[in-house]
Amino acid sequence: MAEFVPVDPFDIVIFGVSGDLSRQKLLPALFHRHCDGQIDETCRIIGVARSRMDDEVYLNMVRESCQAATDGDFPEDMWSGFAKLLRYHEIDATSQQADWQPVKESFMGDDRPRIFYLAVGPRLYVPICKAIDAAGLKTSLSRVVLEKPIGSDLESAQSVNDGVESVFDENNIFRMDHYLGKETVQNLLILRFANMLFEPLWSNQTIDHIQITVAETVGLEGRHDYYDKAGAVRDIMQNHLLQLLCLIAMEPPNSLDAENVRAEKIKVLRALKGFDAATVNENTVRAQYTRGHIGEARVKGYRDTLPEELQDSTTETYAAIKTEIANWRWAGVPFYLRTGKRMTSRRSEIVIQFKSTPHNVFGEGQNQPNRLVLRLQPDEGMRLFMQVKEPGPGHMTLRSIPLDLSYARSFSTLKYPDAYERLLMDVVRGNLALFMGHEEVMAAWAWTDDLLSAWQENDQKLEHYAAGTDGPLHANLLLGRDGRAWWDDNNEAGA
Ligand code: BG6
Image (cartoon, rainbow, N blue to C red; front, side):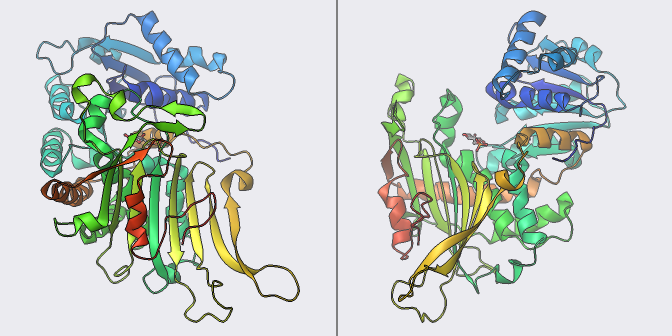
């Protein structure tokens, strides 16, 4: 396991510290970095929220969050050191009357990185940045972190970006897509750009099509306020899925500097084929889950989990699309993307399916193509399916067998740090490579807006799927019409 390199001392202010993101991800991530000795004891982790909490209540809340995110025994000896870094201030950050003095007094200096993490809804990004500025909290070493989705469409993203950029320079704005902090997602760069093997094959000459899946078993987890307005396309496709697509499809960058990587990703996003009312029906599926079972558990339908006034919601919890990248490398190669909540199993996976051999000498049904299956989570690893002869005399039966690289087996002591751990330390270091740039976000929204307005124009039908299934039947037709099928890991029967 790699050693952790300590980062310089820093102060961080977490806005919305009592919310889900802070409790489930940010506070545990900082705690784990503290446990590994990466965070200096002079760092200050300053929570801000509107809730009234005295120190004891706050410390209990943080401790419970860290405990819940720790496998096995909670390291008691580490907790007391971590607790000393914590401060909490009850502030309504958008109020003119807000008193910032206690926050100022919590900072340990202005010659160290000062991070403002906005773990709040995007509509508060600009007001909070302005408040930070007006209160004189910003220093030359200040950075702001924004969570995806930035806005809810191209126009609102533009106004969020403009507002935030009126306070912070682009180089100090860290737009978070936590998928980029996942070890296995970073491994896509290594696979493509540190191995010679695949690059000569990485194009329409040899690749038949590509599938990218982000499937979840979870539902809304109490987030209906946000999710019912967002839906699967804004929540996952506009960011996580498009980022994965970019890493798979972009040209090799000149270096891993943020500027170079972003420039290549933007080219992909701009070359991504959009939709119009005439093409959207055939190339996309939108759907919502109804009640069903996941394993033994009975699961309510999407609408049944919503408050009464939203019971006729038509928000999609599943989306699948077929698109193409209009450039020399990828012309003619379909990219099938899908994401859904309450599906059979949790998995994020990319399947690169190669073309079949041009001439089959082994007889009917013996011409399975090679496939490279990249498993991002869980059971991280990659498998390259090859055709081999089934042992035995007197016949020539071929089987598709994987060369199997499991990260867990290869790195036997491996425990993946959560994506937020890596990304938070990158913010402290000022390393923007795994964060999205302004233009990148805008290009992703331009494509997404196109899809959403084609759906609206076309009055796109909402399909349904039972919770605990792999999505609606129509999603199978999306590939079926092309003589293909979604890769199914359980029976490895995709085609
Ligand atoms: C978030 C979405 O960005 O990603 C959630 O808002 C989703 O709806 C989550 O559940 C999935 O992340 P992960 O890391 O569990 O795949």
